[in-house]
Image (cartoon, rainbow, N blue to C red; front, side, top):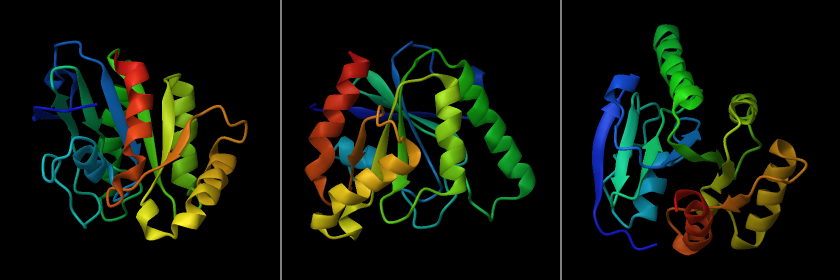
Length: 194
């Protein structure tokens, strides 16, 4: 997909702040620092539309990126970040839950996990949560540039086996450094936004 004019539109913490134009929404979930913002920048060929940080827990709101008035990438705050106070974690958890369970515009969830590690307990909770929300999703094993190219396929299979043993959820490798995985991810996204 050619992206011509992506725009950051709004950071929201409650439904009254969400965009009102009924465009489909492709939602990014994953633990803090798994690379959700870098994913957005890579997919749209921009370096800095989504603010990235090496410090986990930077995203505290739901960020909506309008992609050519066709759909939104929606970047949710990461989970499992220990420096957030219990109270902050609860608040963030509440508005994520409200968004995921009530937002009718959600067309696809992209669940990012780190290819270098087995899925954490939090990842498994999020996986079950997405299943219970009943929304279509795909799993992206991110940071594939951090391991040898020859190992990527095996690690993706391992993650799929761990999270989705029946293998009915599309699971792909991804890397913001090596843009080689981008096309198959776009293909999958396009099935849900057209």
